[in-house]
Amino acid sequence: MNFPKRLVRVGCFSILFCLLVGGSAAGSGKLGIFVIRMAPYGQDAETYTVPSWGVGVHAVFPLPIVSKIFAVTGGFEFVEFLHKTLDLTDNVTGLKVEQTTDQGYARLFAGAQVGGHGNGFLRPHAGVNLALIYHNFSIANVVPNDADPDNPISQYLTNIERVVFGYDLAIGLDLNFSNTVALDGGIKYVKSFSVPQQLGPLDAVKIYPQYFQIYFGVGISFDLL
Image (tube, rainbow, N blue to C red; front, top):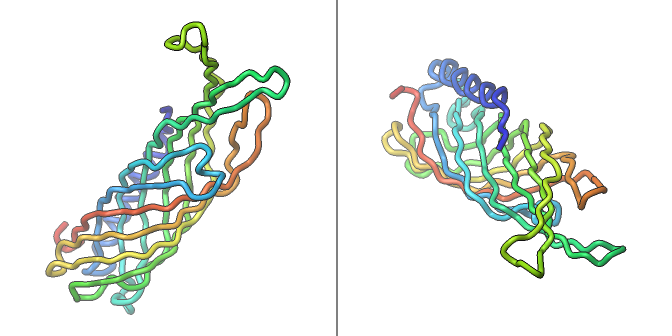
């Protein structure tokens, strides 16, 4: 995986900025880490990816005047998609080829959240985020070898990297322990725009992959940091 160092730096600086600003923005703000289970949704995503695990970090900054209702959110997440194989057949020769795709996926997101910032124990919330999304496709063709099945013929095709825009819609529930530590979980619908994807050795099209995320995490109040 050739993961861009610049995007990593942007994510780190964004979280650091969140810490510096969030501490003074509102006492009930929090910084959290979470684990992601991400599953493809729709043909564009399901063709090239399988459900996989990832990690992330996010920050929540309640707005001072309406801190119990509205908040600004931001964060960074990364998912290493598991190996996916697509069976192809050459229209001229009838030769069967297995196209393998490995994909790395990262999001830098920011948006707004409604709910989840009061003093109660159960704090449901919903939100929407805009995102800068990084996709990396490593693609290879594998031709089965009937004479020696353990030694197929492999041909590396390309390594595609793209940064595109996208968004997500989220709902979740926060379990608040004395306004210090919170357990957070929820579901996100995640969409990317205009990602180029190789379909076979010659043709290339643009796809618009979408996913569902289930996430679980723990957050710590800015007052404790």
